[in-house]
Image 1 (cartoon, one colour):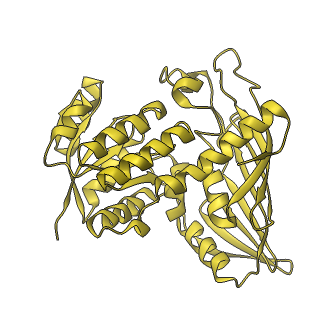
Image 2 (cartoon, helix red, strand yellow):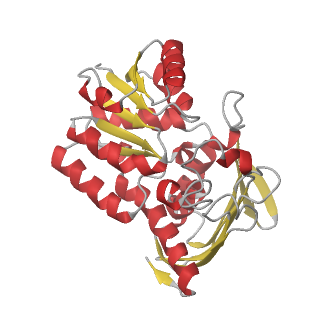
Length: 338
């Protein structure tokens, strides 16, 4: 079977997860990587035994490259993805897929025009607990979804935002706790419970107003197309990174996802039906262990021209719509239809 030539643009924190997954892939191999920091990209390329560039456009000119992974700051995602598909490459982009819905529409147009695949890294969909929860909900065995709850209580400080001047700014990060830390939770909530039609929420900056211009805390009520109601709270103001918690309330049971485990609660009894430790000494535990599975599924989609194996731009945009609605609701005080 043909193996896809792969390039990684951006050698920040997350790129190692991608590089390790590519190194272990049966469907792809690492050709090159690019970053504007010479010391960083040179060291990483040497570690993985591949070429390196300081200018990402050289990646796009490399004929050995079939797929480009984009692991750069948020504001570069859409631009680089579109340049890559114009160069004939397939693209896997880290979250968020783009900064706004205008960029999303442009990405879809370019993808269709050049007949390329663009996938998005919502790797927590590939965690064992998430997959089992989705299977149970979609089977109908638990009855319809009535409600869903998502909680993210994490810690980010001055030192975190000092790591890169793109962090903490609307123009380059696109927001704060919503678009960066809790977007995976919002994605899972709508993936498990169904499409969101409206939101009412608030955002605020409570601890680092003198450091960042974006929000560090957000809450919202989500109104789903199927009649379910969601509650959501996220903050970077806690003293540590607590495990994300998602609860899905169905007619016949409640599902609780926390720390890589899935509990089913029925008639006062709670059973852990997925007990898989997601911690990994090499990565941050809250990244989960779904990247490798997501990447392999994306490569399968590219090789077999199977869109069903790809988390598409449109799918990834659902969480952006929710985030945009929360911002608008916070500024107007109104319930916003998205």
